[in-house]
Length: 52
Image (cartoon, rainbow, N blue to C red; front, side, top):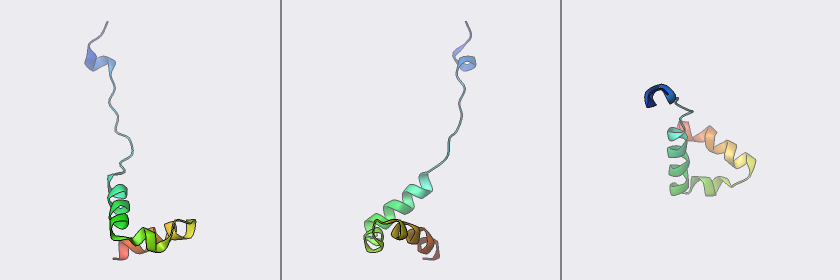
C-alpha cells in the first residue's frame, strides 16, 4: 500500500474563470439581454466585449 501522495494524481483542468467573469458582467450590465439569447446574439457578445 502506497502513501496518499503517490496514490493521488493532481491535474489542472481548463480554466473558465475569465469566461465566467465576462459572462457575469454582461448579464449584470444588461448586454446579454440587449443582444438576445439566440445564436447570433451570443456570438455578437463575444465579438463586441473585448473591444469595450
